[in-house]
Length: 247
Ligand SMILES: *[C@@H]1O[C@H](CO)[C@@H](O)[C@H](O)[C@H]1NC(C)=O
Ligand SMILES: *[C@@H]1O[C@H](CO)[C@@H](O)[C@H](O)[C@H]1NC(C)=O
Image (cartoon, rainbow, N blue to C red; front, top):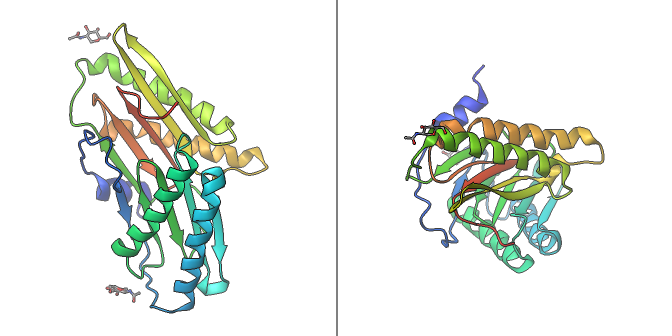
């Protein structure tokens, strides 16, 4: 058996400079399903209905989850905005995400796309409540810090403590900062998709597991880099040397 994590990591290594912080375009996407649907098919109709439903749901809570249709034609989807994003910007992001996936993954039954502000995923397979180990990518700032020996452990400390905060928070979201010296601070974020939550605490532990894995993968991309992200279908962590969320 192939290890799914190895596959995701090996396919996805790529580098992006994070200078364009105000750019609202997509970060990355996968058309992960091998299955196609056709125009005017029940799946296509259900998917459209689902995308409308999700964009309505995110307007109130920043999170949407739902299914449309039944059996083989059922479309299942999830939308999540970063915890600080306003309801208006959240809805805009999710609506754009749906259009963008329609362009980038035409007639694919399963796809996922990430922006700074949101993620959108849909599939004919019910994926709710399961950690997504397949759809994952890394991003890093191409610039190095001066002393990575002292810097890397601080990144790990901050993101590990934010992971512990995030999974205990009902929104599965935490941000924070850590003083590096008198003139610089490290800023971090950890967030899970809320389908990993449930009434039982078992599910909250999946959020923690997902985040712990993400933090442990930082050395694959981001050692000594001035900014970095491990971004998956169920959780993501990010750090920068500048503030990147709205207070
Ligand atoms: C889906 O469409 C793609 C591109 O048109 C094609 O290469 C592929 O074989 C199709 N998949 C199936 C399962 O029919
Ligand atoms: C980098 O940081 C480590 C740990 O704090 C320290 O021992 C080392 O001297 C520093 N290296 C430089 C070049 O400043």
